[in-house]
Amino acid sequence: MNSRFEKREYNPVEKAGESLEQELFGVMKNVEEISEERRRVEERAKRKNISELDAAIEEVKSRQTENPINPRSPFANSVRIKISDILDLEKDDALKFYTAISNTKNKTMLDRDFGIDGFFELEEESDKFIVTIDLTNNQSKFAAKAKIVEYLPDDFPIQARFEKNTLAGLTPSELQIFDKYTNDLAEKVADQFKKLIKK
Image (cartoon, rainbow, N blue to C red):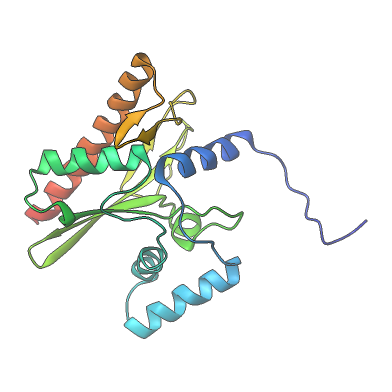
């Protein structure tokens, strides 16, 4: 028997969840092996004298493949626009979305160690506020480290896409489901920002 191959049990919920996260939040640049990923975050934390969580957030921000003001993912983009509308933001670039999802078998330290799939960052005057999110299709997921755990059903329409700057690929009933869940998440994130700004 070749010891190079590790035996792993197939977990369909985990695989479905990873696919859901990739489709709805997009992916960032390829992630290194776990030890290299951890080393980079730990070095950043020591160099800047910040927590590992803050260092993991900075690491994710530095390796985005998409514009945080205009994500290619219709889900992330729709949620960002709705949050901006709810908060009545004057500057479009005040609200940014960052994914922590990898397109490789290796997860980012932010996702793996802190359970954060993505986050929104709001710049309000000289302050920056962050609301973290964990997407899941597992209704029994209780233990989460992210500020918001957002459940999406297995039949959530992940096939939405943009065509000529218009949302496409959804039937009218799928569009209702899409709007319901993007509205719900936008309201939760906006509520968290309102609480953070009041402090």
